[in-house]
Length: 441
Image (cartoon, rainbow, N blue to C red; front, side, top):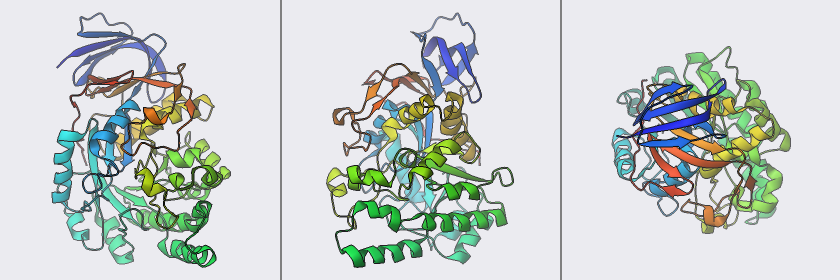
């Protein structure tokens, strides 16, 4: 236990910014006031700096267990800390596929010893485990992940009867990777006939095209409307999908946008090739701009990364052998601060879409806000100090990112987890202070 007093900091709430003092009594925020006079173990004078709630990234692939040659909970959680991310929810497509309580407990046990950020997990759906999911132990997971199309791990649930059964009866939120497998396979066959094994990477946006996303998202939303399911459409990538989301009429149906689709287009395949290959694919400049502008509206509920590392060698393989996935968790907040600087949205919107609403959607207890009595998960940023992304600065096990060589206009100064200063100007506290996320489903 320890106390920290942060003085004269610009506190970014969900709807405004105020210059305040914050007293932390680990692991909680104890007092928020205009002027606090209290003896503390540590006093931070933060004039000119901004304090945001710690980022909650509800879409990561930390690859453990089974795929640790690509990444592991230790390396990726330390990269997250350096990026101001304090909590994550890990996807189920590890080895073994996390589709029952035993697999979830195994991942939790690994996390207790390895993760430097607070962590939770999604349980995965497949054709055999629907009854298991409908009676899943309470508050063990954040929700259920459904792959409507194949992606890394090749697990998909494409049986209409089982989908309806799950959507009609699940007490847990359902998150969906929405791409139409028949459309993708038809497009892939066409390009294989034309190019053989030499399919150019820029074809990815035509193979996993907008129609595949629009059709699958429409199906998922239609079922959720029918049953009132708590549904979250992951990594929206087209402007048409935004029109399918109507949170005023159906507040139970929400959408996520991920960093790659906010920053890159199909034109960028010429430079990045396999490093930019992700599912769903990045699309057009018009799509990217529509997604950026939608963040300040209710169309986009949360912002995630879909942080999905593969080795650099794997990403150099030909198109059909190159696995899909990008890395961005170390720079997700910096990239959003950059878009804010460019005028797309304000700082409170970042706090809302990257912390508050992720916690609300998945019923995470006492996180996502700078609020008295909440866990002190906080990130201190300097909006006037730039950050250059070099290979040497990367903390990912795979040591690559499509952001390499980019200069962001802000920098992450400090990250607090559960009231403890765990990252400060490139230095880490080597003792994990993280917790398993708790829910109130």
